[in-house]
Every structure is written in C-alpha cells, then in structure tokens.
Image (cartoon, rainbow, N blue to C red; front, top):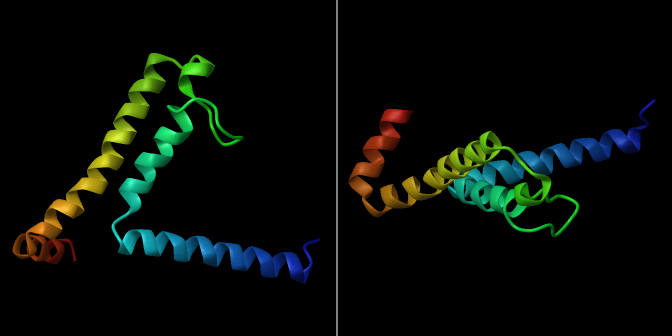
Length: 99
C-alpha cells in the first residue's frame, strides 16, 4: 500500500518533470538537450550508470543507424527554431500556421 508521503512525493516529482519539459519546450531547448543526451549516453565512453556506449557493448549497424537518425532529428529540432528566430517575419508566419 502506498502511504500519503509516497503519494505526495510522486506528485511532486511528476509536477517537476512536467514543469521541466514545459520550460525546455518554451525555450526551444528540447532538440539540444536530446542531442547532447543521446551522444552522452551512447557515444561517449562509459562515464556513469546511465551510459551505454554502443562501441563498448557491440551494438549492431542497425542500432548505430537508428542513433544517427535520432541524433540528426534532435539536432534539427535544435537548429530550426534558432534559424526561424533570426527571421521574425517568417517565424511568426510559421508559428501562425502551426496553431
């Protein structure tokens, strides 16, 4: 049975995660954070309990291709908002069409 203290901590953690995600989205940092995260976990040599470097675990070519596509997509999510922000007229047109 979950007591009230565990329930309260779970709600606080869920709210903190949601707030962090909203801040990243608002600051257009989602792509940059994902890019750095994937590289830190899967490319950089073992550095913590969270890392699983593909070079050390013998990952398949399909895993490497998936990593490359994922990092590329995340990098695009980091680059596109920056480029659009430099052109305010076009950025507002794109943002308006997404709403």
